[in-house]
Image (cartoon, rainbow, N blue to C red):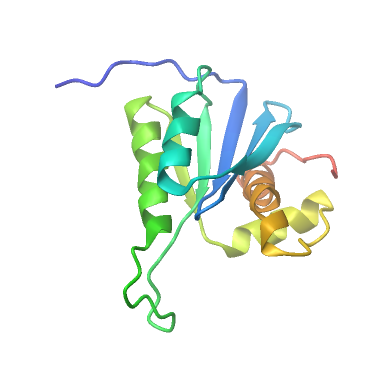
Length: 148
């Protein structure tokens, strides 16, 4: 069965930092931050958030998650991996370019944007999504994001 064709808006980019509470950020074609926030509710909350997007982005940037041998995943449902999959499936279904970035990218992006390091984990999700977006826009597209 052929997937429906959905035209992506060439005018904006969306970045995600998945994981329990997921952060998101959107940027216009000039690399200006146009929105950011946190998505509560894990898998269900993320699915609901994605279902509310009407104007599809040109590109979705998402932090990847890897099972690393030095991190204990015993008895874990590894929900972050599942959240990455939900975002990737959304992008595929809507013919949106999907870019995965390593976790270190967000640190560089936050620094380039002039964001203060988060004081705690609860304050970090949307900032980390901004960091991923800034990294992609600067490193890949060579668009400078005005310091936030």
